[in-house]
Image 1 (tube, rainbow, N blue to C red):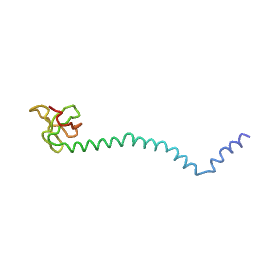
Image 2: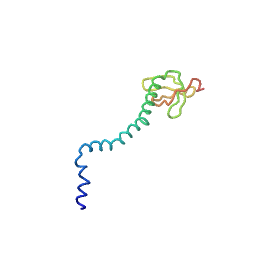
Image 3: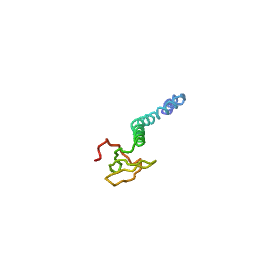
Image 4: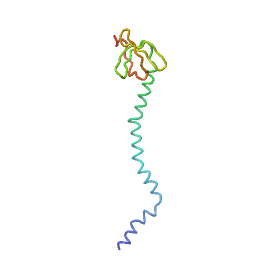
Length: 111
């Protein structure tokens, strides 16, 4: 009696071969959904922020007032390919990398 009922329970699963593909796709669906959510929540905003920062750095001109990632605030006096010369006090000029600029300040911020 127990043996025949065991065969009866496994017989329908062995007869249907198309459900294996559907069950594997259904099992992968949560992983795919998590990746999509991760892309829209973390990856896409970070790429947008990097693009904005790159365009800001390329648009820096002589006379702009900038703040660096280290907290130094000054006025751009000279530009070169990868570096900026910033006047942080009268007669004091430092050279920094362009990528160290955190933001461009409004005119008149540095006195």
